[in-house]
Length: 504
Image (cartoon, rainbow, N blue to C red; front, side, top):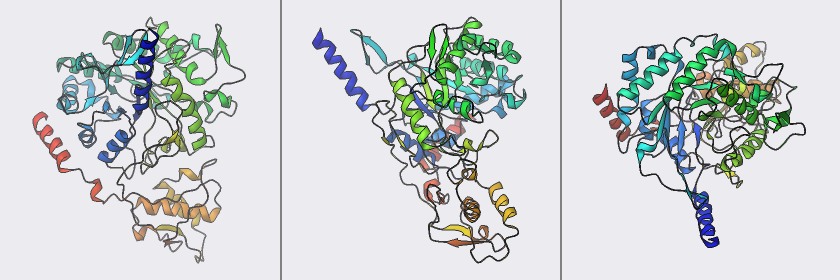
């Protein structure tokens, strides 16, 4: 018996060494960038790092074409601006036909298949390949955080009908048993009362409690998960009174005690507040999927690589150990947010919004991390074959005589490019006024693909071939979007064209 247990332990150990990621771990692949990495480059980067699951924010055909045949599991999504359209059942059926069933073939795109790979053998968990695809659950994200308070109720009347129509369309297409519709929601859909701010008092937000109950009941009826986005970073953002260490996983001196349970981090407390909210509507055992969790690296005083490293170095080992939370011990399926920085995202929530990636804009890793959760932190494998614009920068002309308009020119440059790294507490916050001008001018210059006319600013700017980066402030050179690397391959184009012809 001892030898048998030793053998299975050894098998498990070897399997973990060969596994690139924590079991069930995925990443969010957002594409709101002025210069996108080619989809085929991103897919190869995912494979090189052992990332086997990805969550999208749409169902772009070129992205799906690049993922076809990769073996990477995909959760596709319907953006919020399409929810109203999906309240028409015929349009919902057309969307399913165009974005789901067209890829549902051997060698196509594995649309978010969740495999229960852990079987019990002699009381020791050993992963076994599941050879029955029909045992897998697949998901389609309907909207993205549609009930945010900042949306002022814009999607309250369309989200549930869209969810129902997409699931019913999946059912009619014959894939509803394995592909499930879910709604990725922000953690602001539930809370605990100010008079009793503990997880066990969690309830859905009063203004949407009836709607949330209907959604939860529909999800449960269809064996679909509740998808939630949890951001410990946001607990710190703009709240200097929040206990800093509580946003991480390495312990606090004053935990929150709730019915004898000590909560030492906000992730557990937030997750269990949701568990209590579900329990309050009679579905406390419902499956919960964490659709987004991560830490940004710029754009705020708390957004930096050191804090991101600390956060992931606490989160990933917990996931690998299937520790779960006090009210939900065990396995949790999680998607990190995000994969790559996105310089075209809205900064309405904060400048940090453009810096969530574990990779920089060009697919270069930011810090050491071990996606397997074993603590062997190393730099991830970077994107391969990326081409850049020439080594040229735009800077403040030291010979400029009239600087009276420099403020207006900086504002103009930053309006049409990304200057979020210049904000308070950010990586370039320490630049002097001349450095600020050079940074803004260069970001605009790179955004315009180094067009010489974009580095003039009425004589205030000039082009240089000397790297003008300063300290931790990187003056970037942008990706070359005109490179042949950016053109979809003939195979990918043919794939998309054939499917379009067949299914549209």
